[in-house]
Length: 490
Image 1 (tube, helix red, strand yellow):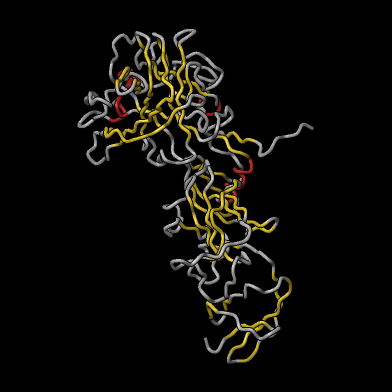
Image 2 (image 1 turned 90 degrees about the horizontal axis):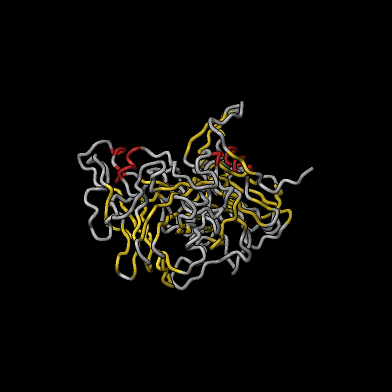
């Protein structure tokens, strides 16, 4: 260090140093330094520098970045201190730690150059008197801790819960106190929540007249409210023209089990009593794409406004205390579904067949006979132990999970034909405008900006699909962009 020191001109107080080289010195200012102009000078064995005046603000939040340039990927970690990268991305509802500088005064009386308290038993960390506002991809992220990092000197940490973001790739992060914000062009790697895939049943049910073939005798009905993504088939109405392949003729529609207490009163899959046979096993069989037991369908009423419903028939008045559907948590190999994610809201609905052979139209995704949205009960999920087994020995068997809804009050269905849908959504209520390729304009703008590669060429990854943008600003496929705020007529 060659006798190097940095000192305040006003009182010759020397500052703690962290790094010294021929061209750079890193020093820490006292916590009680006054807001306004501050004069500094440097002493070395070669002499004393000129006086430099800097301006002190109460808070000037800055995110450390992996580039050491103050831009691009932030230094952010998981709670166990794994650095966030494209291989270790943040996911909706995760708690992450942002590592920062210049957040200002805290509780207590920290001393510059000394380890902050909180790193030893009985020692309490020093927190900011007011939490900052953190936005990730323009959405507010709940702050659970903001203060000095325990056991370290001069380093701040801000712990936040990641909001629900429908993007995969770098997304913007911003930390602010009022109108004072952290630097622009800083991102964290993000991976969106995976899709809910419903599993099919293959057990023929006595007296059931419909099966899994597409068309007029389908045992699966399809409804959606997003023509941009799904076209006009099933648009705002039920259809049995599911467009599914011929393998679905060997299914009994969505796998469903209904119970009254411990007694099974309807079952089209055999999962609960072990009679499913080889339906979910394709060991040594043909291509997996031709095996009905390895087919599944994602059904999400508002993240992707689409629902598949499965047909069932009861020959006499039947009391139900528990409804069970089945899902594949690893349905998408790149976007795994997290059944425990707190943003997930499970839903179950039962529709009647009046009028016609399709579910009764209610104008939305809510059943006319039953909906978990308004009927008290408890959702639970668990691993059935049954596996979808590929014809390739190198493939890991895929688990089948049960989704159970136990009713607080039994439901009695008269003899007749019904449709049951189970799905997962990520908002409090179904939204007809939510779409698989729909984003707000500010989301798209921030996301494209964060992906700049140089010149006028950009790359984005939107909803798990990588897209390229060049100077012509033409996307390879349509994306519906919603206004960031209501548009006032002129």
